[in-house]
Image (tube, rainbow over all chains, first blue to last red; front, side, top):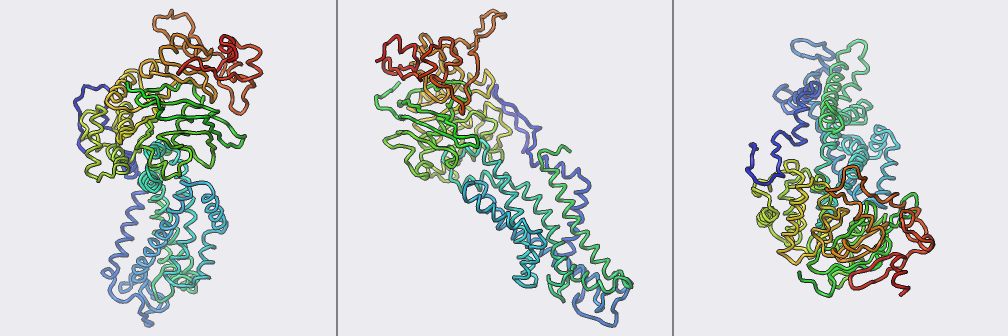
Length: 298
Length: 331
């Protein structure tokens, strides 16, 4: 908005055109943070690869070609081939689609359950809060990956079950995060003021509280996507994640284990892909946290 | 002023206790007073004497899992303490409103001020978005905010403290309530703005039959606005009087102490300002007898043993002090 100076006779007006909104300041801080910027650029490349995989790589990434098996990087196979002669480049490109889908799906499941439950738990307090929190304690008692493993054991392997398992293992984190924020915000005078004019609880939660917890949720979402990719790769590596022949980075690593000594490129490139994807989410997440955390003064 | 004999709000034996880890604290202990239609009642006392808790108890804005409210709060023939939460919610904002003391934090930073005023209009008057927005702009005009159309679309950080308090007043007034609790509406503002806000409240009150319960520790504000004053100390009413009588003939030593501690501009610079010695007693360890006796310069033996009875001197004039009791005998 343009600066509007109001000609007024009242003396209790301070035209404060220099004051940016807190989110505006946050973005400015984020742009200055080089690491976060790099994370963002990697992330764009990653998303670009996922979306443009069919253009960037022509052919079927899952079709075996045993004549060229375990070929080192060359002009035909830019990153070499795996034990079935499939192009590693192609599988990494198509694998980025799978891992991105997993990342989005997992965080989606986490948000879908974690945010509403956290809002209710923090806003209503009392018995509801107690029950939800003890349940959360129980889930947090397991390390996240172990919980995901256990859930896969119950639900079975495959892309969907991988997403659901890792997603559920992340729900308690969101519950805790959101509840903690709600506990502070519900004590704000504006929440009391909203109640004093008779605003409905649902309305207070959705319009007054939720928007104020979006910043920490955004940070957790970015970091959570990194973790989700890592967990999915872990499950894939153990052979209980996304099943072959679907190209998935973790299972690529898993099958490359046997050729680690002789043909290190088979394991190296998917490893780098996982590393860069997770790194980009983490750098961006850290940057977002620094930018939106009111306590950090960068 | 149109003051009818039937009170609009009648608080009887209101007792609010907080359950804390250290024990149960009774912040409001048997408060009763009436508010008549169209009047401004001053509720006066030091910080922590239970003024705000009284207002929050009436509106039932305290967390029910941590507080117990007893007594009666009769409003329009209904005991507010018996209503179910949904009925109570409909009363808040439409017939009873509240203005809070911190204008800097009582507006949501992420909603425009217009939206925040429109919220209660949509809720209670069932206006659609467009009409509610129009009325919100009109309300900003009523509270004398210049360029209301532009201001309505701005976020609270663009407004100064005085303007935000005006917005709060606009929010409180938007559904024409019969009763407004104004909890220290001028405390967080500087003196010139205080005067403006008080003039605004007076001006707005003249135009309607709204009653205001003005909660404050500033006796200057009370003198200017209120017609009747209730003085509270440590969760109890210690004195009630019409405003002129209170300033000329305060009966309770606490009220007299409060009046003496107002700085006078003509006072010699070297003279120390009068103060009431000591602090408000810890509500967990209330003194025996009259709760004010440890700080009272006129305390007698009986004050340390028994709490004084409420003595009704005449209509709208009562005091809880053994001194008065002696003057008037034990009746």
